[in-house]
Image 1: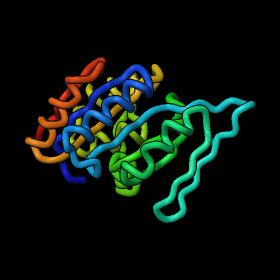
Image 2 (image 1 turned 90 degrees about the vertical axis):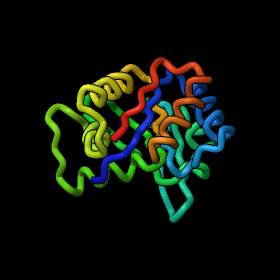
Image 3 (image 1 turned 45 degrees about the vertical axis):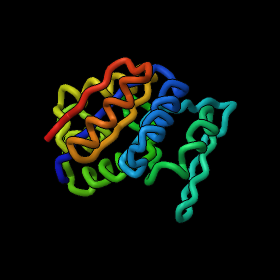
Amino acid sequence: MEKQNVTVAIYNSHQEAEAAIKELQKSGFDMGKLSIVGKDYHTEEQVLGYYNTGDRVKYWGKLGAFWGGFVGLLFGSAFFVLPGIGHVMILGPVAGWILGALENAVVVGGLSALGAGLFSIGIPKDSVVKYETALKADKFLVIAHGSKEEAEKARTALDKTSENECIVHQQ
């Protein structure tokens, strides 16, 4: 997997993550280089479902409206049940990174499939563990990648939002 310049911001709620995506869009950031990762919750009362037919994705769950609003905006999608984390929805290139890591049998001790995908593009293991921990705590990750200039542009836009933390990983 090719190493990337990646900016990762952690948000407490889906409303904050949504505001971040809108700020990136307003700044002119290439939305094809943006991903969002977060948990959704399965309960007995709430049907949870996902299907993908070509470029059309349908998703039901507690945050279905939130995820559905970004399906047409972000490219690529996946729904995983990750041990220790739970039901995780991923929109954007990170979905492909995870699948690439799994297909290439990238195994990184103690990391989930998400962690292996992030590690495979050059994010240090200690940062990956931090991001997995954030997901376990029901937070959302907004991940932007591209050239060094694009990663910095993303950070500048994300600094205008209410992120808990924003880190640029440069290669």
